[in-house]
Length: 229
Figure (cartoon, rainbow, N blue to C red):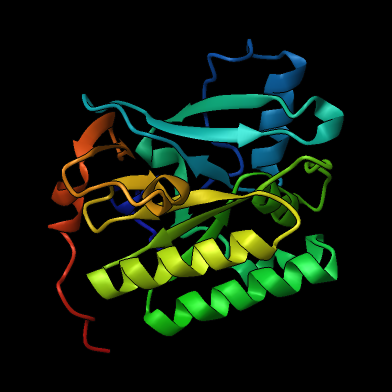
């Protein structure tokens, strides 16, 4: 799924800069080895990932994780809107499972199929996505799988939560990730699976803030029935 315009960017989206784009990073001085690694990454046409954006505007906040042989260094990248060439949704599961052993990949594909049946969208981020994007090693024996699931109505929400719970019980590695509501607020699926009461505050990761909000305020933003196809 392509978003194209920077103003449509959401957290975890893939953000492609122009190959010669100007950027800064507070994590490495210009000309340093990690800065040069980021420069090369962008020049090769590889994407960065949209981070949480500042409330006051300014340069877009993006992220880059380097491979294992570069210490898995995480870099914050700042770039102006004019340096952005394209914005796309996170990778689909089918674009990433070739990096996994067959039993794990097959179970993840089954989860994706279940989610798709509800009309919700499932995307991959984190180390598995970085591997699929670059072809380089990021994961280790303790690595988890990170998924973002966008739900539009209550039926999709309940369906996705049950599907995540079932998959987590069968996968040999930890299943991490978030369910994201229509307003952009996301909550760790495992926290929601703990069946908090509707009045209980849950930790939301929004597009511009991290805060505690009562669960019922998030559920109120969901359509009460499945959306028409």
